Amino acid sequence: MNISPLISTTARVAVCAFLVVLLGTLDASAQGRRKNPTSKLYVADVNGSAQIDTGETIDDLTKRSVYTAQGTVIETKEDSTNAMVLSNGTGIYFDPATRLEVRKFVQEPFTPNRNDMEVEPSVSATETFLSRGAVGLCTSKLVAGSTMNYNTPHASIRIRGRRAAIQVTPEGTTVSLIEGDITVRSGALDAGGQRLEPGQQAIISPSGGIRIQPIPPGELKGVEDKVSMACAARKTVYFDVKEKQESGLDEGQAEGEVTAFDEAAGAGEDDEIVAIEVTPPGVSPDVTVSAASIPRPN
Image 1: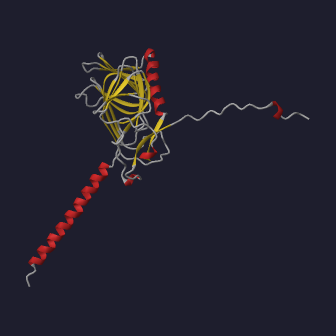
Image 2: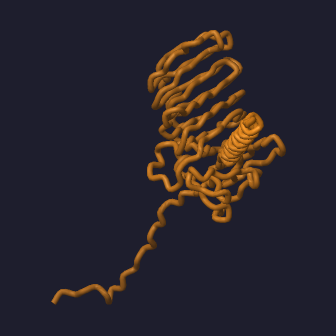
Image 3: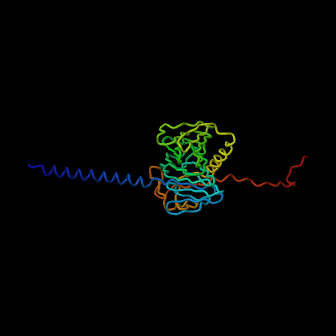
């Protein structure tokens, strides 16, 4: 009996079955990637005139608007400021005449209905470029694996939390740390960088030199004010997973661009990251007590 054709047929069936399983796995993986959430930014406050370039349109910033964060360029005009919050819980305050590019901001899916809002909801990666002006930063407690890098024409700043300010002028970059941990590098050749302690300031010159010093008393209030504005912005909003129709906020130019969490994260295809405003507790109205209702002594 010649069994060679039988073996050949069996082998072909096995190979076909393997390819079907492999293609199915790759397709499921691709679908999972497509369902990862699009990271967001929420505009907490605008004073004066500021714009956001989404890569498709240039819009005037308006309070309470929400955008897809990655690839945007935010710019404040003279005598104008604004504050916003990224969906990893980072508050950013913008000084007048500031330009910030969000070159990369990606975030892994996170579990809805979180309990600790002081910790970022999932691992994130942030890469920005501050070409001019100044920002105050107030971050969540970053989870293990997250990275946050702010670059300027003169320096690369790795931020591990939690409160800091960065200023860029033609004379150089100034980095001031109020709380947390920061490493400053002056260029590609500065592999190790220098680490700042809270209360310290790094001044990086255009030539690449770094000077570390205590934050001068005359500058401390200005730095703390910028950071406080960023922290105040953080308290106005938090991010969660909701069905699209449950989101009551304006989506700006981000509407329709947000993909869903995958099912493993506890959400279906109709869910997205939404910004949920935090309203201060209402103040009870004064109660007027009629004199007739006051008990009288016997």
